[in-house]
Image (cartoon, rainbow, N blue to C red):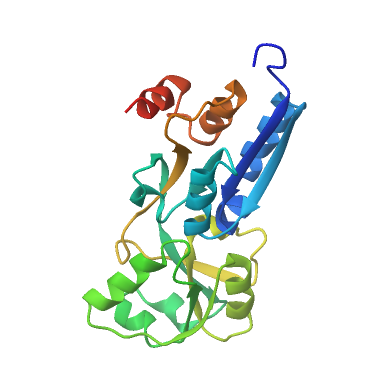
Length: 221
């Protein structure tokens, strides 16, 4: 730490959505600040991410589901996000003044695989309303979901951060309001783990409220 404060390796396990949509600007800032640090991203589902952190295979994990279920991990909330509805241009749902689960369920749904990106919250909402939607296709990748929505195979339910208007020009996004519960993305660290200084900096770049002092206090219990 003292001999090579700005050199080493930082290994992060995360989901596709985080790696593709949330992390790029953070990675860019980090690599500019620490050009001598090798950054490795491992992609997987939330359970795999938690297990990699527990085994010491990676330094930190970032995901929405499952991480808080492991007592051996210190997990800290980074930010909250919501699901949105994505449809082709000129879709009938764009003319609806108030979006409801019943109206969404009139169309085939394309969304995440059960282990990914708040899928449990989607299932809970429909179940609580007594609605059994037709899930036409599931994927772990928001880009795959958008591709099949664009082909007209159904309406997509995905993380709002995964919709980029400048890139997704053939699609329209409809906010879902309070139809689905809020999701919280968390960072996970193994208890009593020794973290290099640049690891604390990466966490703070990703979630500015998670300063080194806050993280160290949480790791002490």
